[in-house]
Image 1 (tube, rainbow, N blue to C red):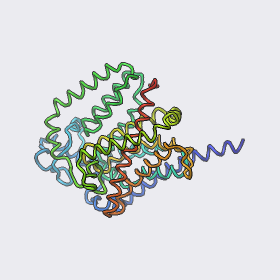
Image 2: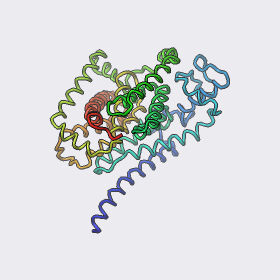
Image 3: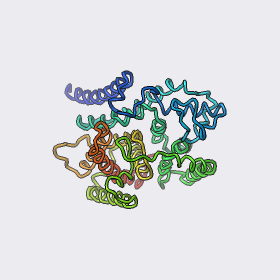
Image 4: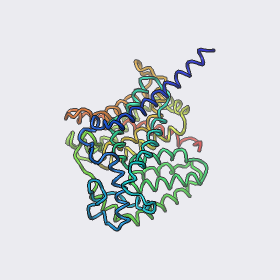
Length: 401
């Protein structure tokens, strides 16, 4: 009887130990300002911390005082930047927020972000818990924290969406409004509307009407702004702190349309590789929390969309953390020395690719950059292929919502 009590207690403490360790690591890096060790030349000590949040607040402050920050340099911005962000944030002008509020507001946002990220770790074997930890504590996540980038705000709200999806019309409507707000803030979360396009969701027509109405209204009022901002979007060459399918063009000198075809073919072969174990995968998924499945779809949908359509700074990979609950859960009984099932090898490849992509920037070498481009391709194609099975599991049966 004593042994039975000790074993679960040990497992629980192993998980909590890693969660506490991750928090301690982040605190040490933050308070001792060790960001240069991980971010190389991207850390700007003169304007640290929370440069991107300061930019947002400077935009709000300047607009409230009558400055057109889309055409002139912002006098309140630490770097005097001309604004290239959507104007939705100006609704917060009534709060009186300004650049001086960046420290306390940034600390609150980062604190909630860290609590949410560690909560996505799941009980699993030690090796996979370590790999999961490396997917949370890494240069890309530190980059997002150091800047307090808008993607952290997107993450904070996205964390709530799977909880809100239910049989309750009000909760679902709130989730739709959250997705709309995030779309107006950063554009790419528009793909999350796919969450609500399912025959298994009650009152689907009402939700579709709400989604279409909100997005058409937003496009009518924001279309010119979108075209204007599009001209100012970053379009840099491939580097260790970015990701995009277009990187393959520089790496293999292939046209973009060919890269798209190669990506889709890779997903097809990945799905075919797993198809022989479809029953096994669906059986294992039937034992997984519905919430974790939604997190996987949420993360892989946003990231794949970003990967395919534009250049992205690597802090956007914070959304890959949403994939961890499913991966760690399904690998919890896996023997690393003998991966019995194909899906186990597949998940192992996903998490290894993600770890490499997150830590590649530590070594500034041309070879590492090329390897990172390859591992990025592997991560996005394999996670998309596996996402198909999760999507089927959520939609081909009666959803518990």
